[in-house]
Length: 260
Ligand SMILES: NC(=O)c1ccc[n+]([C@@H]2O[C@H](COP(=O)([O-])OP(=O)(O)OC[C@H]3O[C@@H](n4cnc5c(N)ncnc54)[C@H](OP(=O)(O)O)[C@@H]3O)[C@@H](O)[C@H]2O)c1
Image (cartoon, rainbow, N blue to C red; front, side, top):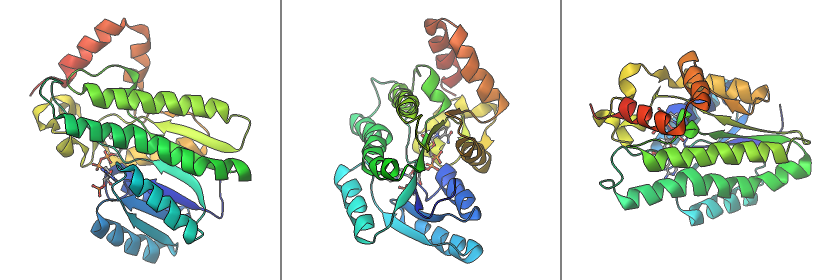
């Protein structure tokens, strides 16, 4: 999977994205790291460049805004930086009953979790297909496998990510481009705080470390797995929903996620 181009990772200033950056750097890949928090990106750049002797380019952007995505792509083109691998990781969730949650936050979530991932894929995939090399790793979630009462919009965004990824993988199956979806369960990152999950029971039953989720994702992607579910508990959950009536799964998720 080695290439001379860069690995572009969105949401690399923390959590799973930062761990994916560390793994890719350790394998000798040069990186383009994007997120809103420039200070954290600069710190990570300094750490990875000195530790691994690779090149790290940072790009501060709010990727929920299409114009900032276009601007990033233009800047990379001017700097003649070739994106060989794209990791669409930036995303967030929001806990609460739909009647009570904030519409602007949810529309912004759709813009980031769905729209920006689609936009970035559209921008960088043509170059990959032209060279017949590269790959895309989309960060979905175990939320992608069933509806999620009390996080209705978030679960729906991740169902999109999984469906889109599997369809794209099929369209590209005769190429050298690897397309995968990583579907982590509850993971110890900044996610739960931003999603207001302190009010939920979801994270009460054990969480995975971010580096473990990232390692499973990177390894599965390298091996050409289309859907990667890290951890036994998450695998069982993702597998079992296939055999249960949809209404039953939905009410189980509701009780697992319920208020603390
Ligand atoms: N943690 C979990 O339990 C879990 C489970 C399943 C799936 N996931 C998925 O894993 C992915 C990574 O999340 P995480 O758990 O690592 O959470 P995190 O620690 O909150 O990291 C999210 C990353 O996305 C970036 N980001 C957020 N909004 C952005 C925006 N508008 N523009 C650009 N970057 C933005 C953040 O950087 P800035 O704040 O600097 O912009 C940060 O680097 C997400 O897609 C999430 O849905 C997480």
